Length: 397
Image (cartoon, rainbow, N blue to C red; front, side):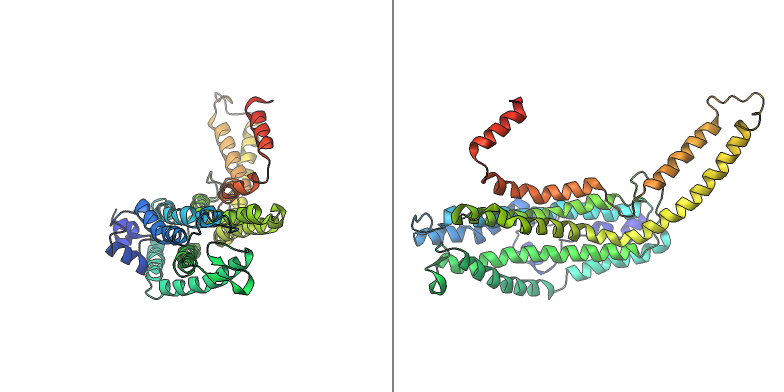
């Protein structure tokens, strides 16, 4: 308990800090000691989506049949402001609890020896310092506005006439809702996404610093990763960010398929690229432990291999080539038990991975990315075919 107190592990957090966090605390949108997910999700929906609805209604653009994409039929707006933003906010709970548990585990499990505690504490302090930088989040907002300009111009050119802008080509004029979308709604979404990217970079930096420590890795650990297998589970929590981004992609692609008649095959390379990039980005930081795990595996393979050889030679001399001591029975003899235990340990070392994650981690991340894209595939399949598939699955007919 003394070690924990001195290191202030309970204060470690990727999300409880920064200029925006302090502002939300001041305006009671976050309660101390709470994530206030529902409260903040409603707040951001009120300032990103609701004004768009009200301004569209005021200008008669909410359900105007003359528009290619009236506001209340804009799938992309729903996915971005009513789905993705709440997911990005809720991700704070999932990810923060996960990383806090991971940081505590490094200490409690004995992976970090006493001599490395000052370096461990320094790594934690660095995360807090970078997280609370005064200039960071204003810079992220500036980047968000720049990216918003690029995205907005592209979106305007992708449709003939929509609630955000009327007219065609260069003669398009922004509506009132369009101005709010460009100046408020879209920059907020971009900022929340970029802030998560920054937080992920902080976590990656923290992992890199931990990989420089003299960690007490165990080659015979049953997680087949020297005792670091829990890191794969932690990285799955960051899949919630990919889930949010995938939701926006799905909404945008669905809109193009429905309103512009674009074939889903046009998006296959973008989807594959997004999937691969997300997996590499999330699991890539764990590769900093690969060198250390490889050294541990090679060293253990040699040491345990030598031990197994010596033990098996003695076992053979005692029980095979010579007569066993009088009165000793082979059945239930501890020699047999030690032989089996050493063999099992050696097999574990042989199976040990040089990356702290396995197939389960990969499946979890792929699922988080693919699930939001399912509606995109479903809208291209006729209803009768979906019904037939459901009947075959349920009843085998």
